[in-house]
Length: 417
Ligand SMILES: [Zn+2]
Image 1 (cartoon, rainbow, N blue to C red):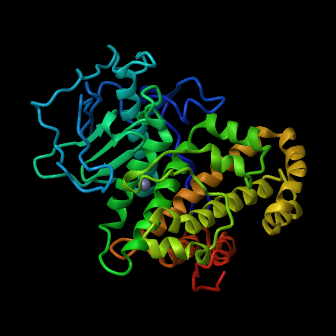
Image 2 (cartoon, helix red, strand yellow):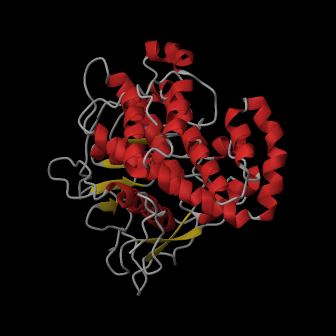
């Protein structure tokens, strides 16, 4: 059993005894992430069969496949299940001991296993915070389909009822999106959110609900990648412990997403407010419209992290206050102060970020669960974050949450601490 920490749980850790897979926790083109890393899924060795597949997920390495939804419009052309009669590669088999880390990078078998590993580890992480989830399937479909490589998708990743499927970065066959954990976790994130929040409402709130879903799928993926020690140490070394910085945000995830066809680079670090995206709202561009929510949520994560640094006496309360209040320009001048502290105890900073990620995930999970069945408007989810925090931590982060969302023009409608 894990020790409970004042209402919040510890960060999910991949179990030592789990089934071994290899994956790339970031795009292989990012320096420091050229090599595949080991991940242990929660499933016991021997319980993941050829495919790979388990009771819920299966990789179908389809050949010459037409996308289920038309890349231009998002309209369904056809739907899962992928028929038995259609061409596909042979199922990837586990090793004699039931693991999948024997596969050679660069082969289709490796890509198939990495896709499974990314989707399953996103589920392992989020089910730790949300409880057991069920994905929606089509009639006659028994498992959720993961389709690693669909040439005709080009520079896109798509998902719909019962499946996710992936194209290639810059339409380059050497850069399959299915091998990028961040991209897979974003797409699987849409299905996790659908399972928690329920269907997209019709009418006036539909656009905001979808805009929230885009931001939220980015948050799902951000939380997943922050469960990799390699990513945590890389981020902290890059930023010298100061997470208010452009490079973190731009490092994580850059891909085209679903039917908007827009470049979906993560833009979590920015100062955009709701009024700045009014045009996006008018045009129905829900990716851009969700950015203030994403920016505010990212700020909450960073503030929680800095409060853990203070609690661990890694930075002074004064430095944390200066950091919170600083404008974008002044934040840059604080980098030196952070770098000096980071050098003294980089592992302490790593622990603080892991704790902050767990707190953040727990709060998001509680807020989304409370939103279930209602339109996920920005204000409703933000309000539910404040409430979740009151319940789980007696309001430790209330001020942080209200401030971050308030600054972006998203009212939490609550003044109580
Ligand atoms: Zn998306």
